[in-house]
Structures are given as structure tokens and as C-alpha cells.
Image 1: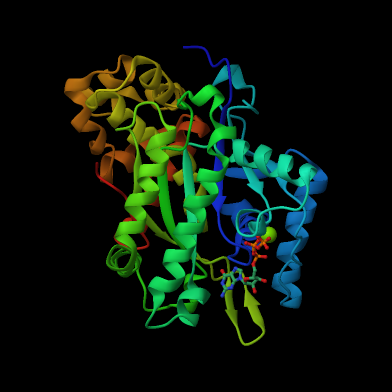
Image 2: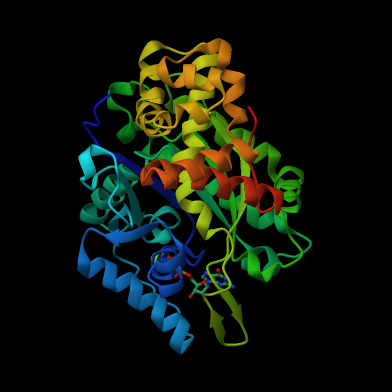
Length: 382
Ligand SMILES: Nc1nc2c(ncn2[C@@H]2O[C@H](COP(=O)(O)OP(=O)(O)OP(=O)(O)O)[C@@H](O)[C@H]2O)c(=O)[nH]1
Ligand SMILES: [Mg+2]
């Protein structure tokens, strides 16, 4: 298979004003510019627009050097396009760097837009455009703010119900504009993850405590959100809402000090945007009864990732190699075998062969495994 297009993964981070979206993006990008990261990692993050990259980097440096978080910008929505470039020339494509092979598109926007509404037509249009862009993503992350949980100690459900309720109502308000002639959407985030933002403030929490809190306090509201999302979608069974959980902290914030070296979960952003939908979509496409159009959409990204992994076929469990050649339902169970030592072996092999994109993707998979072991991540196994 020839690579004819890049794997542009959008990431949709939904969160109320002050829930940590801009800091998250700044810390994600800035930390990747540290010399330690550049020395150790097999890839670099490069903003396609230098000015934007510098802005994020300087936000990060202000936190690191001056203990100052980025100033809120209540009016602007900005789309950042960030390339994930192998540090060395990738052996594939005859030695040319596949610049466009992997890209993360991250939309940062004012959380207020989805809480208090907007003022005026221009802003209304910008909000709808932003929302439509966000819905290009395979994965949507809903931020639950640890600070707000602390503020509502003992009555967390008050905050959580309003968070999910507002979001659900925001979707309902936009529903008519999102759907063309009431036609359900094929391309849409089908994986909705809850993330505990500012998790440094709740050091006793792991992903399981967080999950239990959400289920205990707002399982009804999560169900209602799922119903609204289902209503927008073609291929309704291919949807997981509130089945995956992750802890995030962009830095340790403590007594006026900000230490961005102490981060949690930021190394999961890329794995969640790329490998999580890869596995989930593959599973759905081969096990669920879904319309052909939806199946094709689900397998679109899968085929590109499969291209990279296939380069190491002799390192794959053989049924998995078969899957990658031709999506083979009978062999689907073995996809989970791309784990543990087999995965590490593939990763090493890819580095040896200078297939850096394969190495990056298998490395992402390893990052998720590690985070699961450390209880910072729960992945749905549906
Ligand atoms: N403890 C802690 N505090 C954080 C963290 N991330 C952000 N904060 C705090 O939360 C404040 C708001 O974060 P922002 O990233 O600006 O929030 P936002 O979601 O972009 O808000 P809007 O742009 O208004 O939608 C920051 O100024 C920090 O004080 C974190 O990881 N841990
Ligand atoms: Mg912001």
C-alpha cells in the first residue's frame, strides 16, 4: 500500500473555563522541547506554524521559570497543527521523511463558549465552526476539574451533574446545525473519555477511584449523554462513552510554585489520539454489525497504521499479520497480543530497521500499557 495521505489525528479536549485546556496543550508541547526529551525520544514535536509553536513554548517556560500560568484568553479559538517527526530519517519512503505521515491537530478554545453561550452572530459562527472541527476527532476527552471536585467535597455530584448536563445541553442546542438535513454523522468521535484534570491536587486518586466516583455519582447523566451522542450518529453501536478514564496533570501546582517536570498522563495524549482508536475501531469494524459506510470510515485510519506495523510482520503473531493484510474477523482476538514482550520486540525491531514511524506507534502502545499498570489509565475492553 502506498501512503497517499497523512494520518491527521484531531484531538477534542472539552472542558469548562479554567479546567486546564490551555495549560495542558502548553505543557504537552513545551515539555517536548526540553533537551532531555529531544535526547531520549525517537520523535520530535514541531508546530507547523512557528509563531504558534513559540507561543506554546513560551507559555511553558513562563510556568517553569516564573511560576506563571498562561493568561486566559476568553475570545480566541486557535487550531494548532503539530507534526510528530521521527528524529532521524525514516527508512520508509526511500529515505524521505514522511512529514505528513503523522500529525496532531489540537483545537484550543474558550470553555465559556459552551457554558454561557456567546455574544453575537460572529462569535456564534466561530463557536459552531470550532465545534465542527472538534468533531473531526476520533477521540474526545471531557475534562473533570479536580479543583472543582475539591470545592464540592462531599457533594461532588452537584459539580459533576452540572458539568455533564451543560455539555449535553450544549450538544442539543447545536444538534440542528451539526446535522445536515437531520442526516446522522458517520465521522464523529466515537470514544469519549473522562479525564481527571489537575490530578496533582488529588494525589490519592488513581484511575479506578476516579472511575468509581463518576459511576457512583453520575452514571445516569453519563447515560443521558450517551443517548444524545447516539442520536447524532450513524452506526450507533460503535460508540463508547465513559468507559475509558485517564488522570492528567500538566504540572505540579503548589503554593505559588509550578513544576512542569512533574506531569501525569501527558505522554498519553498521542497514544490516545492514535493507537487507542486504531485498536478500538479495528475491533468494532470486525465484531459489530454496522453499516458498510461506517465500517469503511472506522478502517480508514486503521489501514494507515497497519501499513507501518506490517513492516514488521515477522515480529507479529501470525494471525495479526493476517489481520493487517486483510481485515480478518476470526483473528481479531489476537490484536490484543500486540502487548507485553511481543510489543517490545516489535518496537526494538522497528528502531533497528530505522522504521521510526512503526517504532513511534508501537512505543505509543507501550506507553498505554505502562499507564494501565500504574493505574493512570483504564481502557474499555469492549
Ligand atoms: N493544580 C493544577 N492546576 C492547574 C493545572 N492546569 C491548569 N491549572 C490551573 O488552572 C488554571 C486555568 O487553566 P487554563 O489552562 O488556562 O484553563 P482553560 O481550560 O484553558 O480555560 P479557558 O481558556 O477559560 O477555557 C491555570 O491558570 C492554573 O492555575 C494542573 O495540571 N494542575
Ligand atoms: Mg484556555
